[in-house]
Image (cartoon, rainbow, N blue to C red; front, side):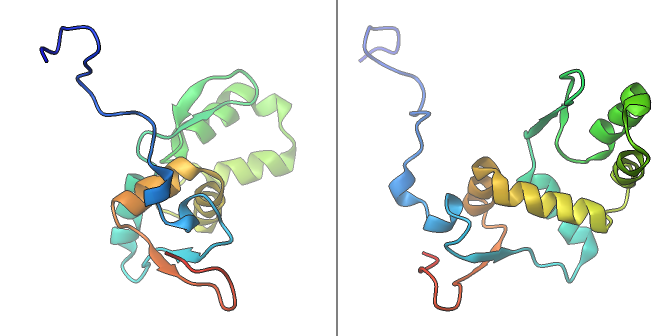
Length: 141
């Protein structure tokens, strides 16, 4: 069939095949997932790859920014909305502006990895995580 004929498509289905995915992609309780952090330089690259294309939106004005690195959206919040933030919020957000990955950024990434199926799916497709079954839990696939 000619690609211009009615009924043909020139792309793959945008609907993922959930049956082919391991359970842990959509169920955070299905397995323990981790990143090999023995090499900090490698860790930063893995985090960036998992977050590739992910977006964050300012809760104050809706401005769009990449989820990672965190510096762009954190700087926006501090410079554009600082007067609307508590001292604690300003202090916490300022930690997200660091160039080198710190503990606050690691915790943020961990939280987002647990919440966003798109990030877990990307990590699975690119084989970027260490996956271990939970003791007495469901199989990790």
